[in-house]
Length: 494
Ligand code: MLC
Image 1 (tube, helix red, strand yellow):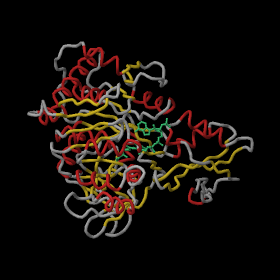
Image 2 (tube, helix red, strand yellow):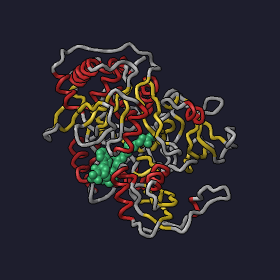
Image 3 (cartoon, helix red, strand yellow):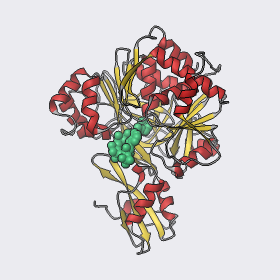
Image 4 (cartoon, rainbow, N blue to C red):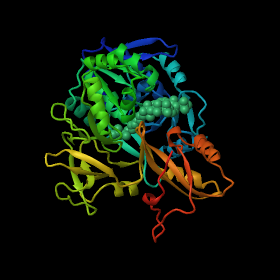
């Protein structure tokens, strides 16, 4: 079944209900009903179709959170066009790779500065809106099977080259329905959406939970500490999805006072955390201050949500909980055989939201799956006798900062492009707010200073990837085979 059919089913009877609150360009808060959301999607679909988009075509979208992002997504879903969301913080170097790989018909932009690879059309979203508004109110839609691709989400691998995880209508439908049911999301909820819509946490979970439940959503451009208190006290959300960095910020008394925290907790029903490990002390501090036990869950772009603490049962701090309904997991050794209970191994899984592969990368897809069809998450975990899963680390090199994934190899490659840098190794170091931040160890000419390297990274990479520090070393510790032993690098001190 296509997502359109599912969205239609949930829309029925809710056409005039408030659906979406957001700030317009002039800073005025406006509310759209589900009927208006639907009408906007229809107009956008008819405009995109008039511009030649057909089922299976890709459309890259480089927008921050805004209502137009939703219009474009719903229009793509309707037309069978595959949307390729791109992180708004990405710079030309990162965008060039995605556009080159996905081969979209065009990139939808906010209409500002970003430089895209030449040869691809840029469609400023305001032009699409303007042209769409002039179109007759009619519905354009393709007849689609559930296995039709809906999204390509780029996620880097240890190679440093981002691969596109292809998610189908069925994958997104399964994930949305599972979450709505597991987390008891209904149309009585008020969901505060602060997470970026270009990643699966905000899009696959947030947006779909909203559409499947028919609840009311307040969409903000991004989470900012200075506006957080006002946002929570005005909108009174019952439902909130965040990354650990956001929960750390909400606990700051300068961001939300104790009285406000108590009042926010009284209106709220559920706080969910994911995309990075939630420290147990944050879990406990939040419970004391807001009176809510955060529900931590675990997922990935390739598989959407995999494991979640229970809504009703014990939400155990430091664990990600139990497999979601329909998901099978095993904790496996390096031969893909289940480890004995209580031992550490890789999380491997199967489930209805699991993708079928990477965009035009059969080689990478083959490596990602075991011979019996389980997906190798690359995350290492242990399972308790009562089934709770605790993540113990990652097999790869991945750094997670503020919930954004960073692949050291990508930064190392950029640094090595400067001929004065002879060797480079990037590692994640602990950070109390962002979880981890990248730090670079380099073997380089004395003439090269860190400011120059920082500037180079800032110009070419998303802000969160710029190393917090550069440490000069005489040589990198390596194995006899030449592999860098990152764990032997000298300890970093800020
Ligand atoms: C940061 N910036 C953003 C932004 N986040 N701009 C637009 N949209 C966003 N979402 C910009 C800031 O404006 C600033 O720009 C620069 O980035 C650095 O900002 P910052 O203030 O240092 O950022 P900070 O406040 O620390 O942001 C923290 C954060 C953000 C937690 C709000 O990192 C964030 O939104 N993280 C969520 C990531 C996420 O959704 N991950 C899910 C991946 S899916 P300037 O110009 O002022 O420097 C996944 C699977 C799963 O992992 O299971 O969920």
